[in-house]
Amino acid sequence: MNKTIRFYAACVASIPLSAIAADLKSPPSPEQISTLEVVRQDQRLNELKQQLLEQNIQLTPKPAKDHQSLQSIVVAENPCFKINQLSLDITNNQDQRYSSKDFDFVIKALSDPKKGILGQCIGTQSLQNLVKFAQNEVLKKGYLTTQVIAPQQDLNTGILELQLELGRLHQVIRQKAEPSQLELSAALPFKENDVLNLRQFDQGLENLKRATNRRLDLQIVPTTDEHHEHRGYSDVLISAESLQKLNFNVGVDDSGSKSTGKYIGNVGIGVNSPFHLNDAFNLNFSHSLDNLHRDRNQNYFASYQLPFRNYDLSISFNQSEYEQYVAGYNEPILYSGKNQQSNLTISRLLSRGSHYKTSVYSKVYHKRSQNFIDDIEVGVQRRQTSGWNAGLQHRQYVGDGTVDVGLDYRHGTGAFNAKLASEEQIRVNGVLLPSEGYSRAPLWSADLRLNYPLLILEHPAQYRLSWKGQYAPKILVPQDRFYIGGRYSVRGFDGDVMLSGDNGHYLQQEMSFGTAIPNTQFYLGIDQGWVNGRNSIASKRHLIGSVFGLRSYSRGVYLDAFAGHGLVAPKTLEKDWVTGFSLSYSY
Image (cartoon, rainbow, N blue to C red; front, side, top):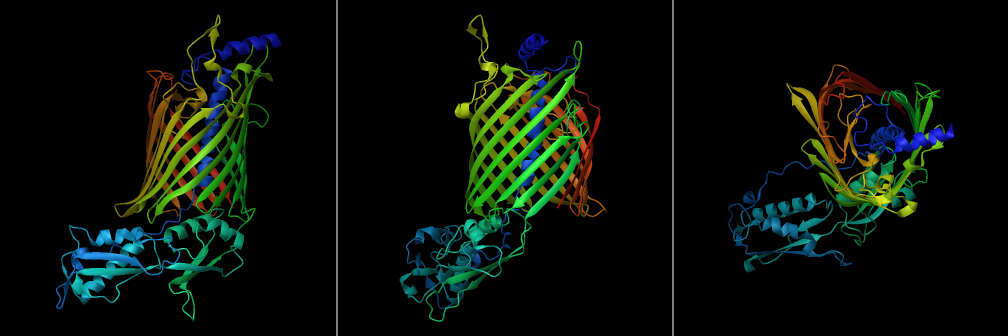
């Protein structure tokens, strides 16, 4: 019996995978079953990571537009003095960490040749207007307590000198036991004697709220100093409500497959600030509910995240397993598999303003997968890969909406005892054949998300767009290809059958509308996707699907129920009605 299984395993291992899950007439091989399970688990895992890592980024609301323009600064006055030159000096720059060049933006704004003040006659009111305008320019850059001053001077020279009194931090004062001094030290990207900047405050508040969205109270007050030794200094007063140390969530959905369990139950626990560093530790376990002991899948996920000033460190581990019985000659044959993935990611804040945030990151990963037939490993299907990623993430406020953009580059390596894929080492009579896939191939990917609130016939609505794309200059192994079809890509299809290719993209577009039920939205969506490359089939590259559903949230209970229908698909994919739901409770 074992010899027969080994022979069968060797045969199915050589079945081409370019048409994976696109032809339902022939039974899938263990490799095809495993690949689809890996893809589904990755899609669910990405959704979970998005929920865990999505932060309420602390962006200061845009200030109201100041309608005072440069043209309105100068008013007709008598007496007045013609200004031919502007200068800007810093009065309290004892540590020499700043220079007037750091504030050149003020002079540039005032010296704009199209609407500047150079060559115009300035009087008392015009000078006050000019100082106010310069002060607003400083505030736009986030310098909260820095003051612009026009000292006494002789304007008959035609030179107007402005002075900056830098607003610095004297000390941070905790008004309550929380947050702790350790939490503050790890979160705040500034220290005593630094020039106060709102962008740094935003970053610090975001770090303090990383573990949980607790309420924080922060005030900036002038330093009380009878001897005037700390002129221009301010104190920061901060307090926080008690931190909820544990979060729990439980849920169920029907995102699984018919072969290994359609209904998936999950339970998760989160520990907030376990080491008093604004860090977070999360555990999640999911299991198919159709049958707990047969034709099943299960998944374990653990992650740890540590924000430190302008940096963020995250570590995660995931393990998924599946089992499926298929008809055999004498008795059912058990297909099973195990997949593991570990990630270490470090990100750094690159830039942020009142309406944007940009960060860069690098990541190292290690993956391992095994497939079995009746508990005998299919050796040629064992995979062990490692590599690194580098990327950029950007969030932008556009009016009342938000735009999130990501760009990622991935490349495999031989680290951590990584092995080349079996597709790279196919030999016939000792001759090495062209590769059917590279496990260390470079891979570019990008994503774009847009959320924008609207008013339609005086009723609130929201437009949501989600796009993701991938480009590979070399042939990929099945696990790295781009897959479309299902709730995580092109809705309107059940996800049991997908189209794949080395390159591809999908676009989800959705309109949601408020209902008479509080915290409940009705939504409609149209999705489309496309795949291409040597590992795709010319007639099986394009999908369009539709969806409508209801989302509701109340007292920790979240429900998403939907129905969809395929609109455009190859003949091998059914365009029937599909339904789905996700129900969860969080505390």
